[in-house]
Length: 254
Image 1 (cartoon, helix red, strand yellow):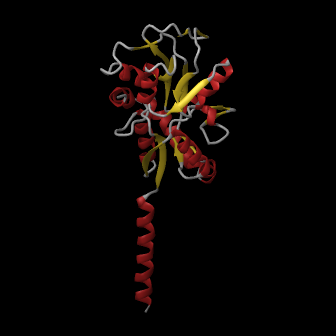
Image 2: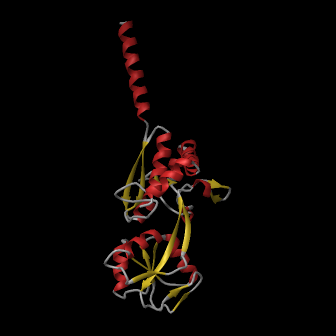
C-alpha cells in the first residue's frame, strides 16, 4: 500500500511539473489593418518579433489576434486580451504601460511611427507641419486612431474616420470625398506606388504626427503578474538595443 501511495505521489508531482514546464500563452491583439513596420496580419512585423522574443525568454508563448483597433483596445481594458500592440501613451488611463515616473518609458517601447498627410495631385489643400490651409472638408484618417483624432481636435479641424482600411480611404480621396488623408507613412508610400494610385496621390513633406508605441497590458493582468510584465518590457528594451535587432529589424519592416 505504501509503495502504491509513493507511486501515486510521484505521478502527481510529475503531472504538476509537466504542466509548469508548458508555460503560459498570452494573447496580444493587433490592428486588423497593417501598421508597418510594427504589425502585419499575414506575417511578423518588428513589434510582433520583439514581443514574441520577450515572451519566449520567459519560457512562454504568444498568440497575436488581428481585430479592428477599437475592439482591440476595448478588449484589453475589459480583459478579453492580455495586451494590445501597438497603442500610444494616449491609452494610459485604460491600460498598463512601462513607466518612468509619470510618463510612459520610451526605452521600453516597441517603436516609433510617423503619420503623413496625403492629397490628390493638383489639390491646393495643404499641411505645412503646423497648420492646414485651403481645406474645406474634414481630414480623413483610419477609424479609431485616437492620437490623430486628438491632434485634429486640438487644431480645431474636423475629422472623418469613416473607414478602417487604407485602400478604402485612398479611394475616397480619389473620389473627392475628402481633400486630405492622414495615414501611416510606410503604408502610404507602399499604397501610392501601386498602379491604382500611382501619379494620382502624393505625400506632403511635413509629417502630421510622430508617436512612440508600446505593448500595453490589461491592468488586472499587470497587477496580478507585475514582475512578469515588467520583465517583458525590460527585455523589449534590451532587444531593441542589441546587435541582433540592428541586423533583423530591416527585414521585418515590410
